[in-house]
Image 1: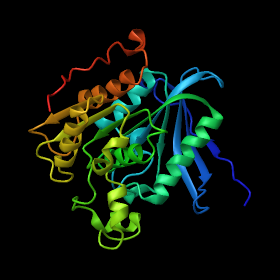
Image 2: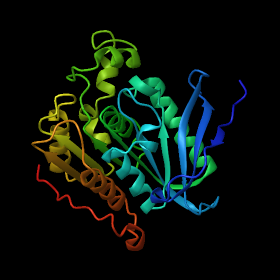
Image 3: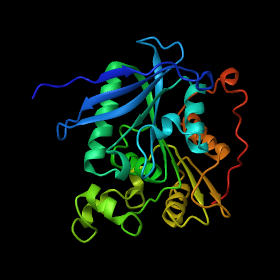
Image 4: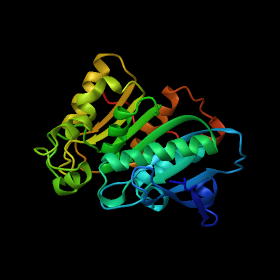
Amino acid sequence: MKRILPILLALGAVTASTGRTETNDVAFSAACDGTEQRYVLMLPAGYKPGQPHDLLMALHGHGSDRWQFARDKRDECRAARDVAAAHNMIYVSPDYRAKTSWMGPKAEADVVQIIGDLKRRHHIRHVFICGGSMGGTSALTLAALHSDLVDGVAAMNGTANHVEYANFQDAIAASFGGSKTDVPDEYRKRSAELNSPRLTMPVGLTVGGKDSVVPPQSVLRLAGVAKAVGRPILLLHRESRGHSTDYDDAKAILEFVIREAGNTLNSDSTSGLKGKAPEVPI
């Protein structure tokens, strides 16, 4: 089958606070099944082909799509856009099979394809993945499955263990190709906690102690194992918070993984974006 190249549809200027010059809604043919899929692409201000940039890919939550991390004013989304702009990063928000993805096999294939396409079209140094809720879960899953592609992962209010996770099971079964009984290996494969040795990159995590939508226990265990073996990890565990991450915490874990991956912080471009969140002992 002849390869269909990505189609970029310019949507005009983005607000000055993002530091972006344009937003593109990109359509591409998914290699795994030939369907049309999409992602939002934001290039940094003054972008020139051939210049090196890092990539930040943001994964939306359950019930949303590619526009959540591109447009939403919620803290997690604003922090991701602001950090990307501060570091002059290429910023991408994929559908990854949209509202009920949970990083099943087709979503995984799409994201890997997008990263490959972007690397061919741009000079990309490091790839960072972030997300909230379903997106945080999916970011951990992708990092564990493709540690060779991911240089840092920031997961907000996600789960690290699909074997024990009990919510959204109809959506997850549809994405994974069956229930936990039907395809148990798929649930183990996509559980970051059960594949923690593959998380060799810097990891930033936020969890809420009162989160009943995506309970924090699996992420807390994952963080404990990572810290015990000396991996670079920042856990922000807010005991009184539910299923959300505030701006400062979201920005703190993003800047942590970027810094730990070896990037140099530009004090001029990040003044006013200084994190207030302290590291919380595990």
